[in-house]
Image 1: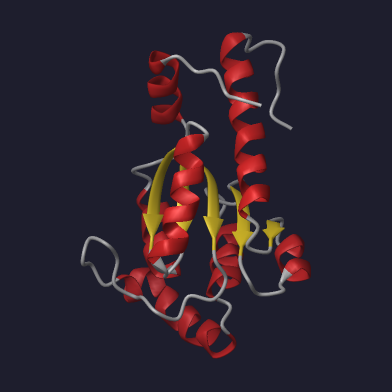
Image 2: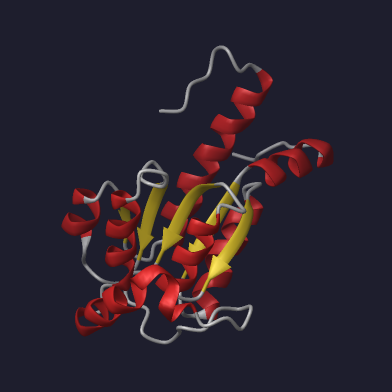
Amino acid sequence: MAINFTWEEWAAHISNHKILAVDDEDIKLGHVMGIAWANGFGCDFARSASEAWGKLLSGKTKYELMVTDNSMPKQNVGADGYDYSSADGLDLLEAKARESGNEGLQLIRRIRQNPALRGLEIVIYTGSDVRQQAEALGAQYIQRELYVLNEILRERSELYKAAAQNPTKIQKE
């Protein structure tokens, strides 16, 4: 099913609906960002849980959804060169999480503890089998299946488009 946006609708949609993609591997960030853009979402990225936490706390951007990996041992320094390892004490939490390779789950726990962020919709997109832990934290789990992520974002995009056309009849589920 094609999404039939005009250029104007697409530009308005993408500026109002942003996703935060979190992964320490550029190729996987590229996959998530490409799927987001193809479905009409703006996409920001972070290469570590610390960088993502810093972006979420800054409040500069309101994200509709966060798509995160679970195991991210490669990066502490963000794309902007800032060392996010000391962002609000997350460095200690990440150090503990790295012992078990669960930086993504630790980030989700931290988000759920923050009243301003706890309502953020989260998809954990990982090769690790952490379905039970992710679902217990209210996150949707996908085991590196791009077509499933595409379907989730396509459905969300269609919902937003329908809501924009008739805001009184459509409600976010």
